[in-house]
Amino acid sequence: MTINRRTLMTCAGLAAVTAAAGALPEAKAAAATPQSISPFPGALRRKVGDITVTALLDGYLDVQDSLLVGFDAADARNLAESAFQAPGPQRIPVTAYLVNSGGNLILVDAGTADTFGPTLGRLPEALRAAGVEPSDIDMLAITHLHPDHINGALAPDGSALFPNAELMGSETDYRFWHDDSFLSQADEHARGFFLGARKGVAAYRDRLNLFTDNAEIAPGLHAVALPGHTPGHTGFRIESGKDSLLIWGDVAHIAAYQFARPDWGISFDTNVDQARATRKKVLDQVATDRLMIAGMHLPFPGFGHVARQGSSYRFVPAEWPYTF
Ligand SMILES: [Zn+2]
Image (tube, rainbow, N blue to C red; front, top):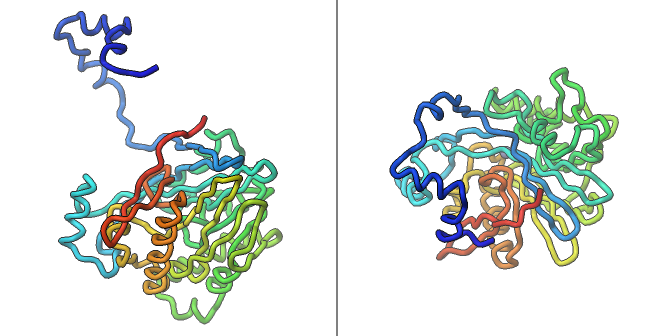
């Protein structure tokens, strides 16, 4: 049914409200309803050919401008304003993606568990909302071993949250985070990243499957090396029939800034220059190929396209159809 003013006005309920000339609902009723600021479980799925991909919201965090690298504060304020965002810290989601290929149930990234405070750690609820238990997951494919992607692989007691899942990760990333010479050079903050990566992987050591760049890790699912954010940072490209989707991990963290200013990095980038080069290359490719992307920190559910805008880009969120 097409909703327009006439069809709306013929709806009995609305007509009754309209008939009560000037009567607004009593404010008291609304005031008595507690207003939660916690996110509800977030799960939205769409089809990529025969494959179902479900975005699962782990929660959100606020990123201070001071974490950006190579940015201009006045320009950031203007970009925030033109994106209808308040200037200053940008609120970004942490999302994981569940890929159901028919043969495999693959979780791409695992969120944060309880390690980032109360605004995050909702992935298990989102998974349940999607009708999936942790024991149903066959494969946990990790874009990179940062805490907002791997910490959620652990149960509160430090064991594997996904008891039947093989952990699939980039060999390059694994080697980097397990190299003691890099660990010994790390400052205290970075040291936490190294130890967290090792802890996450250790829980799956008996079913760890490391892939090389661009390997096919399951039918219709290819790893895509996107180095820079971490040395083995990886996207996953899903192909089914005529459809495809690139889950690009952390190619961009702040949609309001980094499509317009792909030069701007983030202090979490292991190699800012390499991350910048990768971001520019991927933006160019997916804009040219009109390839749908999904990103862990793009506005939830994070599916969309990249359009050219002058010499840079803009993010165009995917419209429906999502399915239930
Ligand atoms: Zn991240």
